[in-house]
Image (cartoon, rainbow, N blue to C red; front, side):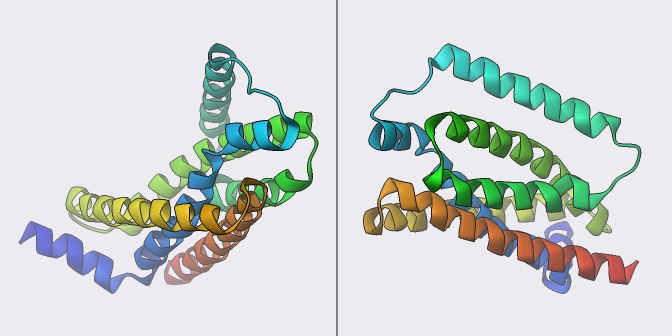
Length: 193
């Protein structure tokens, strides 16, 4: 009965359905991000930064993102996931045309935006779900996990078709689609309040 409630919430909520569909597109974008080291070697003929330095940079970005979220005075979904998704899309679209140092800066911006975005999506989903939250979240977790698997398959096909450089452009386009779907989901959610 509880599982049925989670499934019913998903099937009756266009907002939750849009959130799941957009996850396929954003996962495609994030899957491509794993290629940045290969891109730096391919494009600039250099190795990446030391793993220890990379760990500190990403950890620092995570802390900064957490502090940013804590300092928000109210829940603002545009700040929590619309703007970060827009930044992710823009930065991915710029990467193929950027010099080496700008690539590092853009990647840092993508990581920071993704930390804030993830938190915003979780808060948003919790706001949309009305009952049996754990069951509905579990069901959504299954669906977004399937989306991640589909993104890996589709992402590998994109890499086979294009060069690594242009896969970032494809990832940026996927992030734009994710942004459009999230804006639609937020608009639908706001109109029901």
